[in-house]
Length: 246
Image 1 (tube, helix red, strand yellow):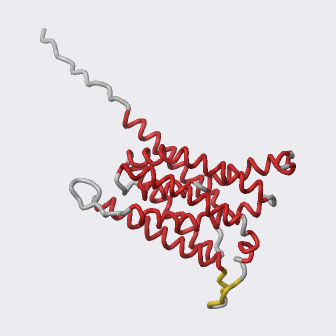
Image 2 (cartoon, rainbow, N blue to C red):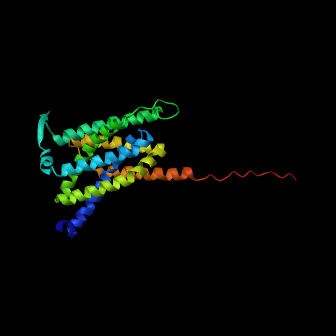
Image 3 (cartoon, helix red, strand yellow):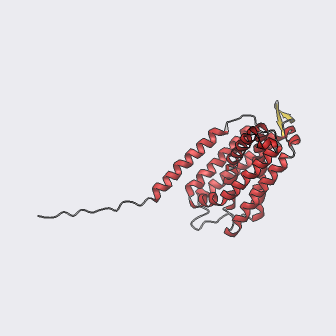
């Protein structure tokens, strides 16, 4: 506890909370899009369960730091490339996210969700299963980043809990906002597709700084929000001028 209350501890704690919240954005977006395919009365429960599972997985990984660090040891070599457990998880997660995002974009473009189209069914258990799969991938990457920033397990656990609480409180608003605006949903799917590609590249040790990606997505989101405000603005009435014959 003394480590947390020190100046360095507070700075590390604040930085880690902020980082976990930012890294959790892609998780919230995925959960929001996936739960949006469930019946309305099950969506809130699915979001709570999904974020709760993410919290449990992150805490479990934090208490398995020794095993987690060992996950960077090569398991096998293929074409002179050593694959670690971390690489396998990131590659599998990236491929799954690319597949899921592409499928959702295809359904959106084909119009299966609107205008009498056949909406793909998704059960509650299937949604939770898919959320847990991505939770493992996002948690794995997030905790490895946290270990590189902070040495205290207590600070990491508290930071993860606070970040998860923030995610839980904001998940419903974010989900409702995405579902109300089709263009934002398409932007979110594009973001998840890009994250999937990054995970795949990272699994092959081709690191792309995520700061550039998050800046691009937040900039695009900011522009889209401005577009939404412009579209909502009432148009000026057209005034017809009559010619007065003299």
